[in-house]
Length: 578
Image 1 (spheres, rainbow, N blue to C red):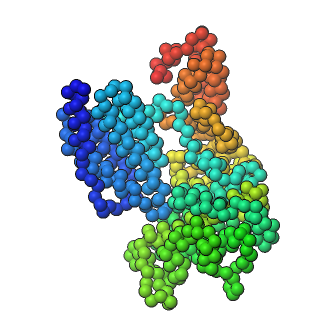
Image 2 (spheres, rainbow, N blue to C red; image 1 turned 180 degrees about the vertical axis):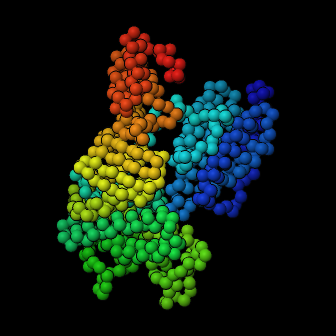
Image 3 (tube, helix red, strand yellow; image 1 turned 45 degrees about the vertical axis):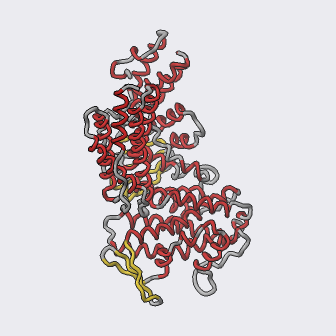
């Protein structure tokens, strides 16, 4: 090992020797989350690019690394609902950045050229992962001047971005929304998954769902579907659940709702959640286990939620109802006298002279934790019924309420509020306030929720007009397992079938339709000129659907080169060469 390599290794070892993370830390501040993540990431990447220079200050890098490690440690502390999933995404992004830094330093200290190159490729992969996660956290922000730092993500040279990957998870976990289960179970499950992603703790929701399915996924579940009284109660509860979700969505997102009004709405929500929806779903669990369904409604002789919770917790400790329905949650349900004191919710009761004080964040987290349990149980019941071929018919009013609650939630997540829905033949027109930067994934998500007879969708908001042929998105959702190339082609077909302000959007903002044609040609070329010509004609069909004259002209250019017996980068205009 030569002296220069040894000196570089000593330098990198010194750079890594920073102070430990402080013991007492606060979670990330949701109000400054984007700024903190952006500045922290930029600082460490900038320091990384400098420390690799021969005479740069090691102390500056150590300071940046200490600050970054502290930021990373804070991201590991859970944020209260409804911010928990976003906080978890932030932690994953910072972890990818950390791996980028560590692997880059490993590569710089390596004395084997081949191994160093392998490490550099791995570091680049970590950086690409971080950049993708950043786009999910803050799609309209770009604080990373990575080009200037020489740490550019490789996404510009990769195959087209599959922006619909996460949207497809509804189909992966729930009964079909558009098939035989188009009315009822698929819709309710889709609504609950969307709510879990938006407001709840998705990991906890999934864990509760798995345990609930273990209890409910048995042949006995078919028996409750044969009880007319239970079926009627199920239909009413499904409608009520969708209405509750829509109401909560408005309460949490309407800037004109005061704190006092929000508190009133949430207290009513908790009471209804516990004494109607939770009581009903626990009764269904006990019925599947061979018990009787307690009578509906409230009043004398009716089992309350508390009694059912005790019975269910004794039978199925894996549901851990005592923990999920935390003391904070039970206090909210038991205390109907409440008021606000500055930033605190104060709960009082004639039976308990000692007032209970909770911050509003703690209060909201406790409310949403109860919703998380109820929705996981409801989703498990819907899935268990569907798996045993028991479809509960939903009335048209129920179906419309559930659909529009789910549509409203999806639109709100995308930045659009106060939607109005107009159905005309096979066309659904949505008029909403606000604006969005996520129309492609939004249309993909809405496609999972709209009726089967709708073929065309239009969205009008403050500054955009969007139209889409939803059948292309339906085909995408039912595509099955495809390789990376076919998956990307299916994705791009959905782009070609929609228009944003009259133009077909290309999924990668750093690319365009002509570059798509070159990517297709370059991918097909190793399989021979015949395969190249076939795939480029396929690309031309997509470009024609997108009304991209530049893409069509590029297809013709590539086909001419192929007919000439050869094709390489020199056959394309300079602007299209890699």
